[in-house]
Length: 147
Image (cartoon, rainbow, N blue to C red; front, side):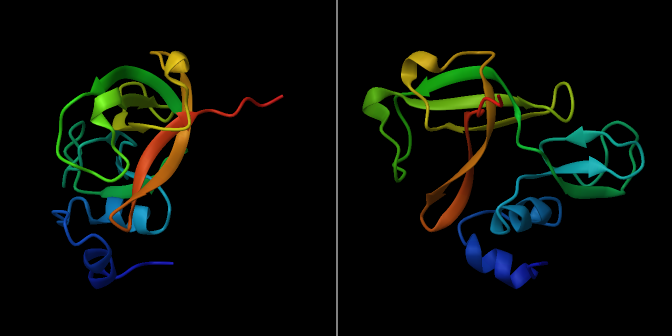
């Protein structure tokens, strides 16, 4: 289902949505993580840009990613703006995840459903969503082990 610009703007009223990132927000509205990908050379890129940083093509399309990856960087925030579900007193876990789609393609989000002792660089993770102020927000959780 395609969501109109009006539907996306209404769902994410506090975000700065423009022509370069509207596909990302349409994805969130649909329960997907979409990252811009060049339709000509296939390069994925974050942050969102109107042109491919590799081949300079304007054929950039927000494309669903698998949501699977590995924790590349992990930090615990002890100070920040108030947000629902964020406890800075204990250190709020934020991970930069290298996504499986491409070496160097990274996305930063909260790490959820994970014991503090298990949080580490190299941890295999998968996409999850949390809700903040009525909006879906990407997060990551430990990947389910497949037997």
